[in-house]
Each structure stands twice: as structure tokens, then as C-alpha cells.
Image (cartoon, rainbow, N blue to C red):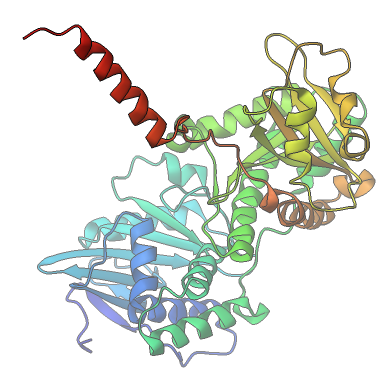
Length: 452
């Protein structure tokens, strides 16, 4: 990498692995180390670039700078972006300014808009923000005003936990080819995992969570356009994103949120629909896709019951006819002995309502499930843990702590042992010799009546 600065920079320096900065400059230190690794670890840089739609192949060169001052800027401007990323592939060059926050510091829309104008004035293609705030995908943004802006300069977002998760998956899956680069990425993971780096997951619901719980428990109705509901749903979506990162690191695979296409393409609509569900049902829900799992992991937070439900829905085996046989197929997959708070819901054909039983009762007497369901067999099962949290449910930090214990525990103990039913391949009913004998006999019979 050349020491010469790009022509549109007045000031800046290459991102350093060991930045010489004030001990109080945690933000600058963390940003410099991450940007340096992005440029120096090929697979790490390629993964992060791919997440924002930029392909980094073998011919691609990545350069990263920190504390940059741009040539074209207002004379009274003191704005200094935290970093600059340059991606070069042949003659093509793509550039992005970086704005980073660590710890509890949050991004601000006016600052992002200033950087958008700086990017436009200096021929820079995009702005990337990094913070402890979470968003559904790197191509969306946690600040609604940034998302709605009419600026043509796109803004992408990485949470620090997203960056840590990408590093963790590359290491655990042994996807870094170069030994030295793998060691470097391992050190980055170690650094980001330490509290001094200022990186943290979503750990606390907002104060509006307490108000919503108080309103619902007293029999109140959440008003339309409730600012409290908006804040709670925004926090919930940040937490479910963080939960997908936690499961990714625990399973060493890429766990993602399962969204409908309309919600993927319109996060405002997603929030609006979630607020409606919160008002109508007092529920917050999430669906998490785990590679090769039998079904998505379904999470429901029930404010009325102060309860977290987490489970999976499986199609019943079709090579068994009776309810008992189909249920036993499922029960054999539940390996744990302690089935407290574990329930099985059976879904029946037609307009028959689902029925539900504690798993312990069905393990003891599977015939109970068929009572009153003559000549019917369930078409699917929902197996789930239902955990009542009491007053901990209403507490901003304890709710998140319990949720992040309950969801992985269900998948570890139950979900990872479940197998989706698959229709068996067709079998040949007769062996080849008998089939040939039949064929030969038929030909001989036909030949008797044949006259040349």
C-alpha cells in the first residue's frame, strides 16, 4: 500500500493495527484496528464488502484510512469522518466514508447527513456507519430519518457485534486460507470481545418497556400511534438481530432473521405490522433461520402472560396413520428427561382447533392426544418451551438476560435434536428376476398366436 494520500484527502493516515492514540480515544483505536484488519485479512474484507453489495475478488485491493479530512468541504467545517474505505478492482474504484460510535454513544442523523454531503462533494460513493445499534441488514439503517432521507448517497450500517460475528464465523469454519491472516483475525476477535473495546450486544429494553407492561397488566389498551409501542418495537427488532448473532456464534453457522419479502424490502412496514400485533395481541414475535435445522426457531413474547415461548413447528410423519404413531415419532426425538415447561401443540385437519398438552403427560400416555379425535391424525406439531418470568419480565435488563438464556437453551436441548420428516423414496416391489420371469411368460404367450 502506498503512503501517498488519495488526491481528495487533505489529511489522514492508513488504518493501523497498533494505532498511536490518546488512551481516552477508545473509538479511534477500535475503528483503526477493525479497518486495518478489513484491509489485511482477505476473507474478512470480502465478507464485509459483500454485505453491502460490493464484490471483493482476487484482483481487488482494499485500502483503509482513519481521521480523514476531505479537500472539498465548507471552510468553517470541523467534520472529520472516522475513516475511509477504498475498494479497487482493475480501473474501478469504489469509496465509502466511515462514521463510528462505541459504547453507549449513538449515531445522529444530522451528522450522517453532513457526511453524505461531504461524500457527494468529493466523489465518494457511500457512507458506512458502525455502532452498537442493530439493524435487520447492513443495507438498512437503525435511524429512521437516515433511512427516509432523499439523498442519493447510500448509507450502510454494521453493528460492532455483526463485525465480531463475521470474524468469529470465519475462524470457527476455518475459512481464512492464510495462516498469518487467520492469526490476525483471531486477535481481532479477542480484542473485540474484551470490554475495553467498547463493543456490546443489545442488553436493555428502553424505559417504555416498563410503561407498556404497566398499561397491559392494568387492563389498558395500547393507543394507536403510541410512541411507547414504537420505541418497544424498535428495541425488540434490535434485540432479535443481536439474538441471531448470539446463535450464530454458538452454532458456528450463519443464523438469520426469517422475514417475509415485503418486510425485507420495507422495514417501516415491518415496524408498523409489529406495532399492530403488539396492540392487538400484546405479542412481540421473531423467527430465526438456523441452517439445516428441522424448522425455524419461533419466539413469542407474551406481555399479558409475562411469558416467553420458544419452539419449532414440524410437519407430522405421513408414513404413520394413527395419532399415537405420529406422536411417538416426535416424542422419540425429545431426548431430555426434564420436560418442565415443555408443551406439544397438535394441529388437526379441517376446522378442528389445535390441542395442547404438557410433554410429560404425552410421554407417559400418548393415547391422551387422540381422545375425542376419532379417525383423525394431526398434520403437524408445535413443540415449545413456555417460560413464565413474573416481575423479571417487566424489567429492562433482566428481560433481555432471560430471553438470551431461554432461546439458545431450547435449541440446544430440543431443537437441535429434531428432524424434519421427509417422504421416502419409492421402492421396487418385485425383485428383478421375478419381473423378468413375468415379462418372458407374457412374450411366450403372445407368440403362440403369432403367424408369420
